[in-house]
Image (cartoon, rainbow, N blue to C red):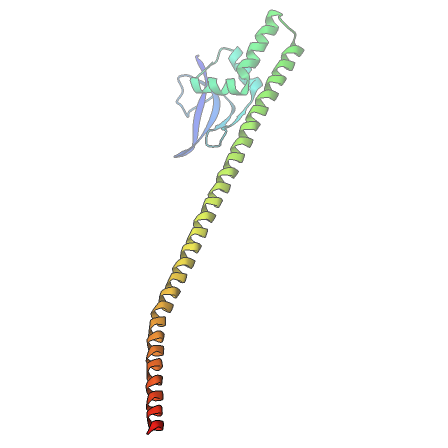
Length: 190
């Protein structure tokens, strides 16, 4: 029986969610499996992977062949590295304690790298939101300034339209007053 470590698709259309399983290569993709090793959610950023590393290493040592994507996931979570370290222990290059120490150091470094990416993404998201708010504030201020200018122009135009009518009325009143004074002086002379 040829055994593979592969992904079983679950989830709805457009929202995939995978189970990482050990299955007979002749079984259907989402069909019968021997053991479930973990889950993989590619929707989140970075992708969420929950994997039982010890069980995966046991199956790799038993001869299970991972598919390309499963191999990438196993490498990402350190299952292939742990198998490599166990090979070094079997050859006598170092002891089991040294292998565990190296694996723990690798996992710690990997977690720090992933955490850095998560923090970078959250910072980038916050910066993008802040920039969008600043741009929106500029647009709003430009609209307010344009509306105030249009209102001031409208008032000035209205005052300009009223001012000539008042000036004409003032000029007529000024021309009528001297005429009345002239008549009054003529009567006084007579």
